[in-house]
Length: 345
Image (cartoon, rainbow, N blue to C red; front, side, top):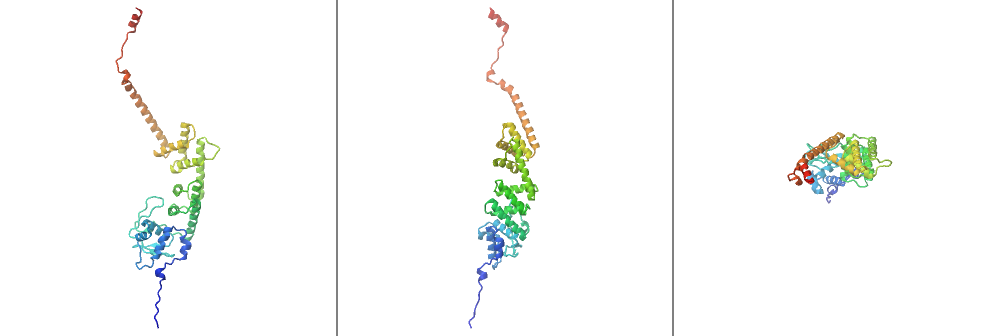
């Protein structure tokens, strides 16, 4: 009887990807993140048993920080986990252990700030896992954001929205209204949207109702500025809104300071001018003005300097007269009575 030898090449030459990953995870993930996941899956059964971050970065032509971001993303999704030691490849739709490198690079803060150094393991820098409901809500949020912004979200855009959700603890409804509000006011830049989000966080705004109340107050500010200029009976133009928004959100001035600058504009040039008010506020911004008392201090300082210059000018005037080239000769004295007698003789 002939001897038959059976060989299974499926596990050696084929990487099996479960439908669960395609159906529920792939669509909302950044393409670079998907590549890292597939590469880890490809090397799951390697005899070597592990991959380092630097090896993954070299194989995918990415930076090590890009790889770390991808690993952190999949950990948030609950598909990877970290242990100590070398980085091992073991992804699956169930939780699987993945060992970090000896020194994990700092994970960048999506808000643009300095990254917190890793003191023990990458797990300290990762938000808790989201449950399925949160994942679905977040996926829907990303879809809505793309509709408002009119573009496919980049990895940076997704990281920024994730920052709103995970770090600023904004609800998906509030993030959706945030993006809607900014786009309706002509701003599609994620950098600008982030500045508004940070402003809301500072104001402790945590609901859509509170955000709407804040925007109503902002609209009230716009009409207050128009009234200060003596403009009534019309809505503010988009260019005027842009000025007022910059003064309030970018420069950080309160309404009383803005109205003071408007008043000084009218007193100086006797007509509305957003450009002139802009020059006043930029000057105050450069000098660190935050309250009306700071403006009063600048006025007092200006008045003292003005009086000092006036005093210096008076002091310099007599000495300047003595050195005048028309007075550099000795004057003559006349006896008027003697001259009169000579004239009548």
